[in-house]
Image (cartoon, rainbow, N blue to C red):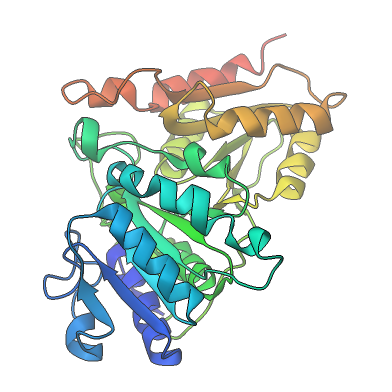
Length: 336
């Protein structure tokens, strides 16, 4: 095991894939010589050459279209979209072409494409560098959607994403690249000394359909992914209530069994995500839990999310789900 932050663990996953499969290649805006704006691909072009790790023009639609063609012709491309907010110019290619190819061709063709993209707030990025558009893609059959939360699962999940024969949208919480975020912008630890910062140097993977129980509890199930996993840890501690915290890890396909079994045990459920509340992925989870756990629920399901507004710049910390908001929601589930 080696101590790594999330940038280093993602870089390690990419290096293993490039070594183990000559059909894997990486491209995107500034990923080659510069190593990516967050340095995730740093050093890979030097190790594997400019024919396998290379820069693209600032044209996300073109990146997606080229990735699709590569996948059709036997390659396994990993395309970086520099920020998740920039993925929308590629939306038509991803949703109308890439996601549907296996089905349109009756299984004759597939596009094993992975789109890596940093998502979420917490870096004072304002409107165009802070959004969490995961629900735009969970609503598209044919795509897998992953949202890692720490160095250990980032490496294992990325390996599985690249090896998948279906297209994958792989969201990386940029707030957690260099350390977990517990909701206090004035106290920002690194991954040093954190158990999830201990990462094997060798290859491993984590199945895409498995959630992770971060901590067990008896009185409330709290479900989160990305940065919010760590904010929820602090909120649970402050609430003083025995909560079972689930890191979803993969949104499509999501691990309904783990969630349902937990809610049947606790009888209560709080769902947390950064994206706006209306039509957010939490709404899908809430409906699924209600359908499967109706007679076990002892309180209404609570959702703690971003607000239904464009992501702000100057009031970022009021927009993101806070320790206080999450803790209050947990306590409300305990009321008679």
